Length: 231
Image 1: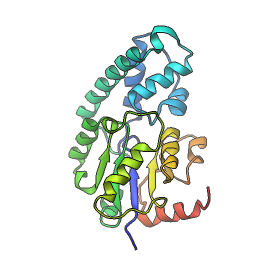
Image 2: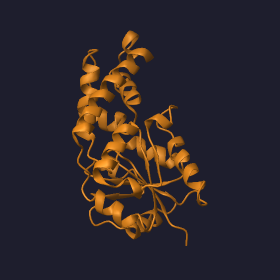
Image 3: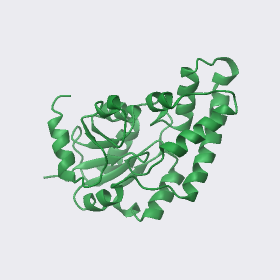
Image 4: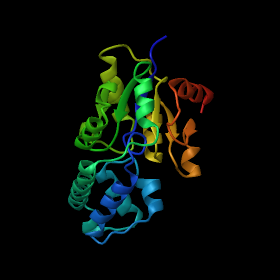
């Protein structure tokens, strides 16, 4: 039986990033007078790059003109990315159960990271945690600049894995923590399993839900994916 393929999102599946990402984006947009709620972040911004998140927040705020142009959005994204990078450099805690799950799964499944977080921040956390060698590939923000959300980052990761050994499309699992990541995983024909303390709407959006990765095994994930049936 081929080894299962499991992709982890960096944000709130592998590392606890919600609070610093929210703060970084909020401060970056506040500089232009744009405000948004926690609910807007959860529903529209989480799981996107900083540029995508800024664009979504501005759209939700119904802000037009200069504040909605691409130059302003990119500048806000740069401010947010810089602030978040400073938080990552100080150290981001791993999500509950993530380290044990990765170490236990690495010898059984083929693991990858697919994220819209900057690569430097992912690399820092992997270096601090000693988990870098557990992952076959990492697809980060710099690897895809197209529309969001989309399945392309997952497709890119699948393509990288396929260079080594064949990959069966439609049987992989994506561990995610946002509605945008659920949509992206589905677009790539993966089974999205939502992880973490999330809203009921998000918990039911995937093919399964786990409060955390603590105590979770690869077999548990395969059971959830198989139980999703034709969803």
